[in-house]
Image 1: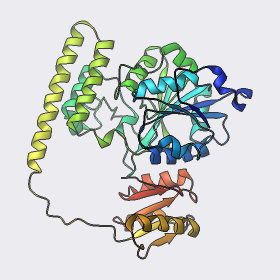
Image 2 (image 1 turned 135 degrees about the vertical axis):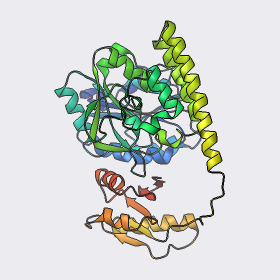
Image 3 (image 1 turned 90 degrees about the horizontal axis):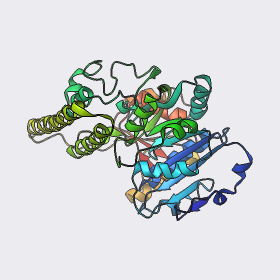
Image 4 (image 1 turned 180 degrees about the vertical axis):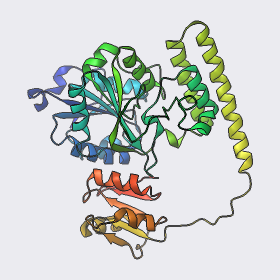
Length: 407
């Protein structure tokens, strides 16, 4: 484990490591902010995915208060850490990692993701076979198995931004005209060229970043991936959406996209994008339509809230069954951890061996069960398949030390 407490001193002598003796193929850059348990599970998946690849993991901690470094650094001594004294934002932190990255390919990866084994091999091979690809994104699902539309997007034209912000695009999902922001007309299950990729998983040859520049730090929270994708697009290179294998992104855009706060942040990012890439009359029109989209969205939210104002009399339900998919030893340690959390024994858990056929059917037959996947006994590919095929609402992941919930 290499830690840089003062990121200003990023001199090459800090990295007199064994990695200097071989050509680094892949640099994985992860920005962390108070999500140590999600990052733990992410790093377990990354560790398996780079098993046969000369790779380095660079973690930039944006002044977390959850003791991420103290918890994770002993578990992942191979990782390089940069500890910031303040939250510098996503783009700025990514650029810190890029400044020290040695890989031929750079992967910007969110800490709340799980990647399958051999995921990176396939991405790197695509770059080698198709020199026209400038950046590569991937099909993403949330922890309940729902497709995340931000996996593939179109250029945020005036029309596309207005239809998205106003909420109109939701009524015409799949329309090339109304749903162009998310390229809804393109099949999510097939590979495509996509103009805009998501920063949650964005792989780019370092040579391309040296030509285009990396993330614009003016975008603090949203929009930096849109801007970078667009700049790569302007060079004549192609941005590519890879449908398989999919990954899990727990806290994707879907968690906040219906809040007014999200809309305001998106508006700010769109305003920066418009000011940067538009000019003259088109800039004025874009600004006006974006404002109109904000107010339209706010109106729809108010109407929706009024329609839902009647009290919900449906009684709250708790999982009637606990299903553990894993070997007996992992199940026992998981149950011990759960007993500590609920301050008592767990009643009648169902332990299912990983090799048991029909796991997805079992979960479909138990939609209210709390499901625990033991990472020690399953591949990440298997777990991602279980999530995406079952679309179960109560799946949890157990690393041997911690539990994270999918939904």
